Length: 298
Image (cartoon, rainbow, N blue to C red; front, top):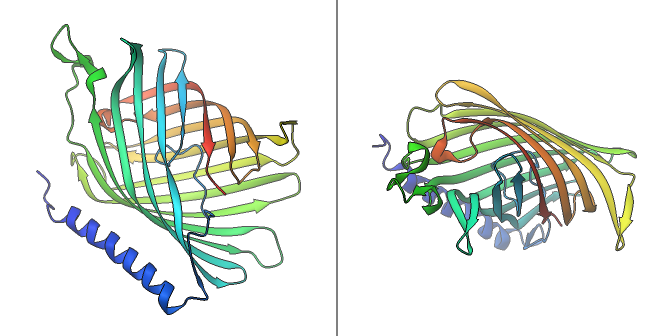
């Protein structure tokens, strides 16, 4: 049992306090606050595994799929000055492990679910088209095995792995630098995650990450009035489960649409690290995949 039973309640109180302060600011400073701005300051980190996405990745080796469903939305924007903005919003998403299609339905073996919120800050570097960015997230994560992981022949869980009571309430801080040149767009970011509650407790509370993304601005071709561009992304995480080990995620593909706007991305990926699904949080895996996701980044 957790030694901090009151922490989930604390997490909910912090979320409600955050929402109260944001909406109160809208009445106190009406000229500087915009509700439902329709823009997202800090776009999802493409190669990171704990980001809201809408799409799927197919692994040819075992014919499994990782299906991502969800999104993040900036609900409030506070304009500090002509080159600096703070946004706040919510995140609700999940990803599932689909192992096969049988009896007219997908066999889902595991699901990780996330919900919470974030505050992001963007500032234009004076005299340039480059930006400094910060993001602070507070997220609840839970993990579940599903009926696709159940073996009816043995009347037990497949791979002899029973459900794990996995839960993680964490804060994540991400500084980033977005450089916009004529030929390419570059993003570099870091990350520090601290879990105020984590189960099982044989894990480190702090994680660390580094990553980068590149967009080639010159379109490869056009399809139905949409430019198609090449992009690539890399994410490195150090997680302690229980000892710190690296997890590498690399993706490369093409995007139909603007680099940081709405669009469709098709990609190839390679992952070498701790299992995406926290019901198997100590396992290591290597996966090559092909997939797509839809960007909701107006």
